[in-house]
Length: 164
Ligand code: OFO
Image 1 (cartoon, rainbow, N blue to C red):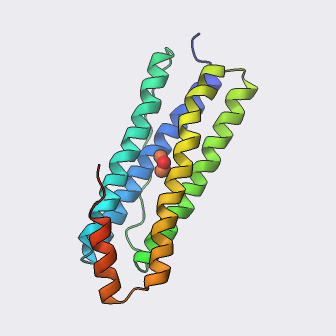
Image 2 (image 1 turned 180 degrees about the horizontal axis):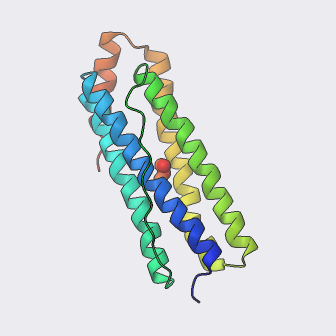
């Protein structure tokens, strides 16, 4: 069944949010590169690529349901943060906001009786649990280790290991 206009519009808005997420994480990568933390910057670059993957998953789904993808402008992300901890705290807050949007999308698809969209969104519901957990794990390490030079070198090495 062709997707209805209300769900199509909401999915297009989510495509924009996922692309903004990519842009935000790339901005965080640039800030971390500037702090000389290449491992943390690498982690954020991979995260940015994942977000483009999320946007494309929604894009492909809208096309598959014979809907129309309409791209809007992507908002300018911040360029400065206070520290690496501030970066990951902002990332966690952002992911919590994205989780709320995904939950709202599920509610909307349910109200519209669009079972296919509810089913597709299940992947995103599960993914958001992972997204929040991976950022929170890094934040906990930052809290235990602190931000002295030696600790940051250890953490940066670990973050450099993230696979795409
Ligand atoms: Fe697409 O999960 Fe993050 O934003």
